[in-house]
Length: 312
Length: 294
Image (cartoon, rainbow over all chains, first blue to last red; front, side):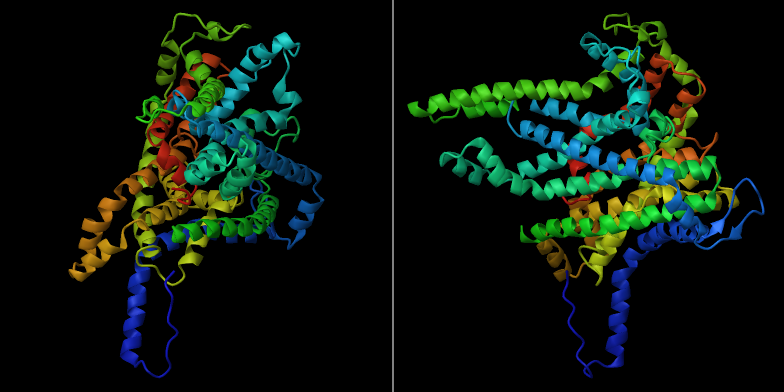
């Protein structure tokens, strides 16, 4: 970043200062449209949500709107369904991101080697990520996991697990399988970029010194990959924590609320239960939790990346 | 890929005898790796492949206990999908995608410029503000957005989606384009400045040619995200402004589950993005990592 020289007192006269201020605005001007637009569209609604969370307001009963203070927040923390869906969100996010990352690292290690048709395999592997999430969820709900006509049922039938209803027996797991399928390519791409940025001469030197492949991986490759893995985990978590499409399309959060996550539960409260105040309070709680977790992680990771950018 | 390995083998240096064993072993390893790679690749691709195969079946052929691989393909389900009013949804999706992407580029390019080549004082803070908006759960913003749209009579209006998609993609575009702007060689800029070229000419003649591929990559990423977006579309549109993902939802609610027809509709909805993604594989990594990875 540009270093800003501390102003030397008494040297500059008024004209120069005004000129400098004008220069500052010339620099800032290109930035402002995007900044103002983003603030209005993304920040304003959150302030309004904050205000709504202090109201008792049912959308279907006009005139029901009145101020209740922190009552909604008390309700949120006493709501056992909120706690269940919060736990589901954690399981879903952590499970999906970690499993997708482990598979992604393994796949990236394979794709980092030369073999016949590597480019084609890479193309095949990234495809799940490109499938429209709504279509992917439908695809898994029907053609893959259907208890009678699904492919998974057909494959598992010889093993005695025929006609198994995945979506009602393992609702959360089924949704996670679909999400892992979609997110593994993302992790693989990031880790592959990390592997390919690894200096080859060091690896060659280690190999010539007779280091075992696994030792090379643990001592050299894994430390190098750490930043890339962290980046993948954080970015993946940002998206997965907000996952709505898969839950909505595959299980509608059910049976009961066994596969509902927070975005889906809040959506239900607001658009099916019409409880604006309560849904807003839940939203605020989620936002606060997300900010606490993500801010530190993001700063940490992007600082480490922009650091090397300057060094390179 | 195969060309690489061939040149490696046909290299001019004949290997010393003690290395041939190691090389044979490595070639053996590469064969195993190749097989593993192909098996996993096909495994991951299979659901998509199966979707496409099913879309060419009749419903009767799709509903079999033992999946049928040999059948006479038919386009009848595609005809059904297109005659059941898919086109207005495609038009809405295309409009929202294209217009929001243009808006994103128009807003993000000068912003990225002010955060890279002629940086403002609080560059870091502005950058983190942009990325932090991506972390805030949209579900917490949907209620005021819905109520505001209702009161302004903007529900079921495609421009509501355009505005929201622009806001959704803007942070990614700013980060991504900034990383491309930073690659503009400093000497080029200095030279242009020494020549006394006005800023507009510097931008058009020096900066634009260097960042053009980056702008294209940014546009692709924004298109993918807008085309696939579902949450805003399903909550804020009904009949007039509904997009392709909303069309797919219709299959679980009204039509009942017809595999073949569903597969045909899902294939049509998904294909544009898959093709774009295949072509733009390299840029994908950069876009998805907000420009952090080159």
